[in-house]
Image 1 (cartoon, one colour):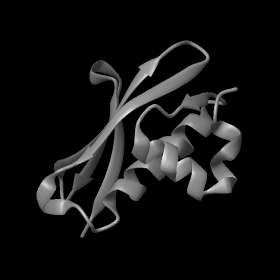
Image 2 (cartoon, helix red, strand yellow; image 1 turned 30 degrees about the vertical axis):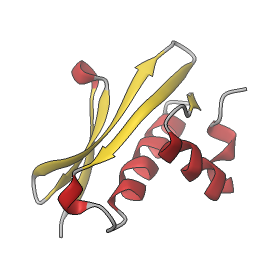
Image 3 (cartoon, one colour; image 1 turned 135 degrees about the vertical axis):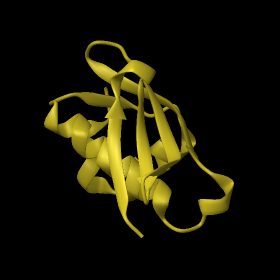
Length: 93
């Protein structure tokens, strides 16, 4: 199982590819200071395999590399940040 996460600026989302096929997305809106994450989804056939965490972790790492913050309106992103204190500094004030 080969996974890759890429940022699609034109579609304002991060995409999770599994063996070259897009199987998950994390949508975002750029507000200038922060990225708002309203929706994250993994294809039904691929749920329960930890792919959502792979997608969100890569997105958060990219946000950190840009020295930006996150507004987690998506429940999955919010729970990821709550469960991983090492990413708490990314949460917008």
